[in-house]
Length: 352
Image 1 (tube, rainbow, N blue to C red):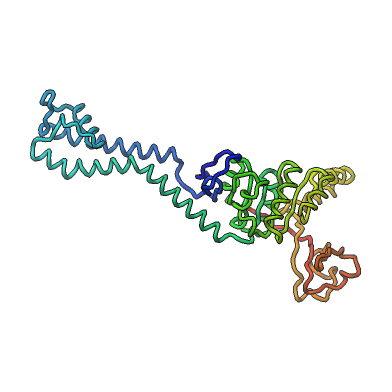
Image 2 (image 1 turned 90 degrees about the vertical axis):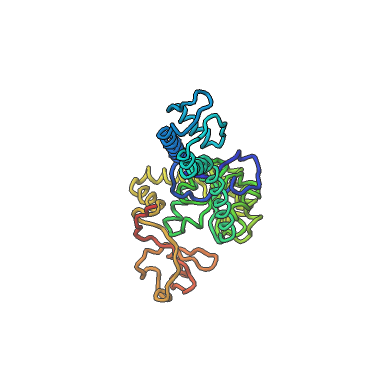
């Protein structure tokens, strides 16, 4: 359960605890905590009532001189709440000694129970503020995922499958429910409009190494990409768009890679229609952690100088500098130590 409080996404605030949600820590539900404190308070009240009634002869009631069980409960209530009307008073030495040694400590316990919830809220808020400040000072070279819908969650699953730790992934979304889901998944969440620089700064995007832009609308993706690139010139920005015609706009806005979801889905549909088996293999390659996976890795010293066909992994491309070479191209016939390989290998089941 997320312990951060959220305001409307259109309302700006400088309080980081209103906008940044860290992964929640296990704890009792608030209703259970309140019920537990209420039962403790009632228990203290009942115990005090019985203690007073057990020695009711040592008390004096200004109304009728005798102290009944109801009078004992009344005395316990006004005493524990420190109201103290004075209409019922201890008159015997034993009753006064009980008030000193028993009733007074019970009064302190009762007050602690009543104010405990407030103190806990203040303590938790201070602790959350400290955690956020520590996170902001330590996070760097992280990945910012903008949009935690279907595309954003799939991107996060792939990153986690590739070994990226949850601590280095920050989710930005304008919907409070999406941010709550992200924190439930163990990620840091930032609530706000990602087209605004202030929101991306809260996600520490200027110090990020990668940015995934996956909102619902293409025009929003373009604005986010432009803002992200202005804040961070060095980060790798990967953006998703629905329509092919919008891909050039994303590239002009600063995206290094643009993935068109509608055309990619269409190509997969067409391939599956002509060859269901080929479509199944492609779907397998795109789903990390099951069956076959497409990964990128560096060339090892033992592999340098060899042909891609001689390696144990199935090499499909060679990355040399800024160029991506097909493994069949003559330039890729001999691997260099500075190359990187795009390979297909057996995936391992990933659990989160």
